[in-house]
Image (cartoon, rainbow, N blue to C red; front, top):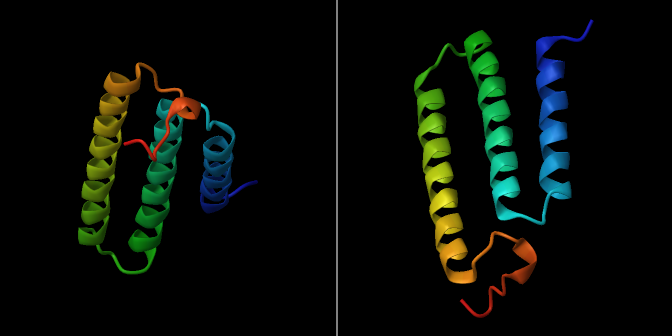
Length: 96
């Protein structure tokens, strides 16, 4: 039977595959990044619960996850207002 840590590592690799394969839309990429961060948070939780019993680092990681999500959504909104779509192939980053 598969252990919980092995299952989380499998989910992490699936999340990496989703991030690499869904490069057409920026929203799909942001959702894949949030999925990866959630899996990393679970891995850190189980590691810190067994080894150090330290919750403060986990709370700081959670705050960074929220900041990353807010920044990604705000960039998505700005790009949709400027370009009209979240299709990643039409963005010319040299123009911005």
